[in-house]
Length: 368
Image 1 (cartoon, helix red, strand yellow):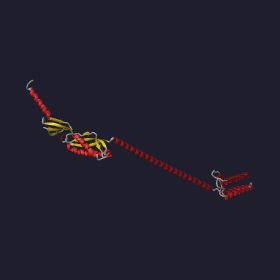
Image 2 (cartoon, one colour):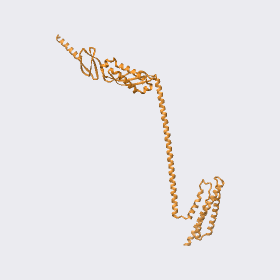
Image 3 (cartoon, rainbow, N blue to C red):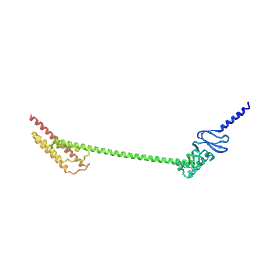
Image 4 (tube, rainbow, N blue to C red):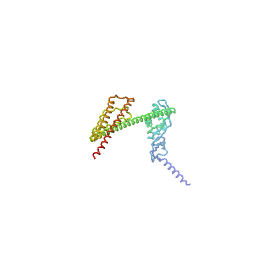
């Protein structure tokens, strides 16, 4: 090999080494701390940077993105002397690479220990129930203390979260029993409230049913009474419109009398005082017709007198007699007497009608 070539190659290698040692390329979200002869010089920013070879060197490379650090469970004593294990999650970010590298030797360990001591101070002033239900308050107090302490380290604590709070097993069993009792209590209360509402609704429904039935019965009675009133009014108008005389009314009165004693609830029956007048009117009516026709005046008069005498006797007996108690022998005799009087009245009316018809038949051939 040519002796001149060797020095050229050596010089070229030295130049390449110097160029490589001079140029530093820093990735995005990274920071490099440069020391010159062992003393902090500057922090390289992302991109192409130049340093003095041999004199400058990179001491620390830091990531300025937000970091997540999860600590191990730490035992903490509450105010009511219970030991609980608490896991925390820390979200932090390096804001000053120089302070993070030179103000604290191991910032992660320092943050972890500071978190434990702060947790013990905060939890020590709370009982177990407050510890389990005050996570937001604990997180806020932890963040305030850590942010204030790590500010001089060039680190900003963005968020602190309690990941888990584990009480002792005996406390867990007691809490489970308490929660089970609370759930049973709520279930019993809800069941009782449901039964109460069901009874109230049932009572309301029964009340509405009774009210509606009563209103329906009332309306039916009103309509029935209205119908009967209108029927009586129509009958009354028909009677007056047709100008019915006393003879027709007396005949209808006698025709209705046998139905008065047909009810099973009647234990005695009093013959009304108007019966004699009605029989006399009917008998007189049919007697007048017979006399006008010239047929059997003596027979009709005799029957009329006999019927009037029988009815008068019955009328005297019934009007003057006192009221008879039910289920007695006198009541049965009164019923029998009433039946006998009704039969005699019906017989008298039938005989009068027969004589009237006979008189009419005998009168028709004479006219021819």
